[in-house]
Length: 132
Image (cartoon, rainbow, N blue to C red; front, side, top):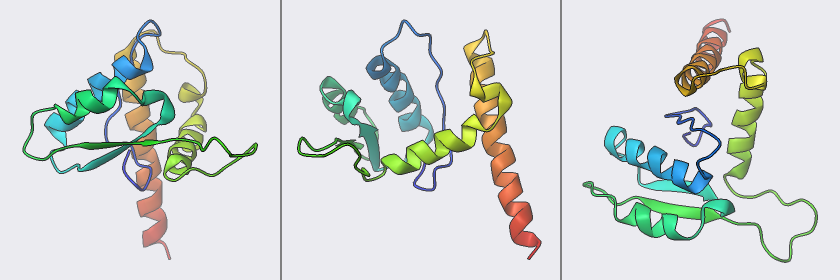
């Protein structure tokens, strides 16, 4: 997703693939399709070898993978930079019935439903701006 919370690309993988390995699939596609990306923020669960792997992706511009971690001294709740954008987008997507639960049997269908939901959201926003 971009900094507005709009989905650029989605990869849905089976549950037997770790999220860090799934992130490699996503980062590989992002590097090919979106050459203008400079910085990618990721959750603390993606720390470790993924940062080194992302730095080695061959492209004309280096990708900086920044990990957003919760501080060790944090209390119960802490707003993390950029994390709220992701959570807000998940909230938008969960309003769509087909995405609220896992109804799909094919991962390609799940990706298509994510793109349909985001397209619908963007069209509604454009329509509301033209109807001042």
